Image (tube, rainbow, N blue to C red; front, side):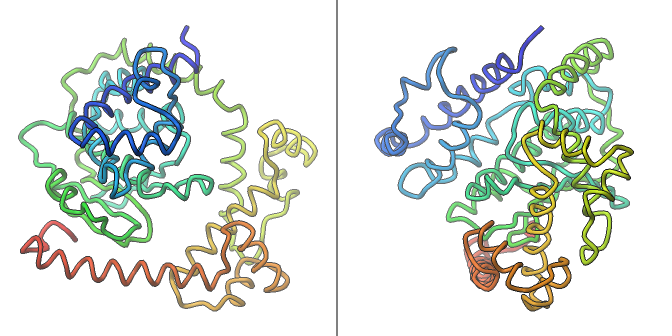
Length: 367
């Protein structure tokens, strides 16, 4: 049976091949200068045994995406990938009976292909929404990670959907301002695209879930999924319990914070057992609770209708000063500085929208 290291090596090798195919479109001296900033060269990334795992590839994309190196590289790289580049997960998806099942497979085993973000699926009547949540430790690479997520979804669906159905039914929303290469979005993914959204997400008509996949093979799907399940179980024994704790924390009003005892009771275990299992997962109840509070704090600050003291009260802090210290320790800036930065981003988005009106001639398909 394949190991997690085997899976990482296979996927990163596939991704490297796609990446260097895209990099051939850019001036070699600029690309090499970007790689040199990271202390690496092309030769070290070539070959089946190259020491470039998935985390390093993400960092390469982030560095090269700068205007002086290879702007738009993350977007172009994402659009160059194919389902089978995901290795075992890709084979499982292509073997599913319909698109809905294939997407469930890809997101169920997402942790085998990326550890930078989670995906939450929401059923909104006639629309299925897939919302991205980037782990705070990777927040500095949010644009690149968001582009990888959106283009990955676009490529999967475009490979699986019948040719008679237009991809214009997809909706893409990005929580960032338009980049200098914004035209590439519209040219590569002709659909409804919006910048400056609350959360990066992709959406498609719910009816597409039932569309059949021509390569369906129940036996292959079963075999691949069984192996993926074993790999996922060995990836992070504490992943599931930390996600369960997180869901329980956000399930109650934030001004009545969950206590360790409450969560342990809901999970039908003693507080000591829960603490021990979280310790095994290299985290703690306090760390998860703080992460949830900080995520909620950013949402309240982006809404702009609550003061810092009101947000402190909503989040259950006994004193505003305690909230301010926690926020600055987590994000490296005060709540007011964070809010000001978001306002500046919103203003850039508004200016970008005006520019699109002149540059593209029409805003049709851009939300």
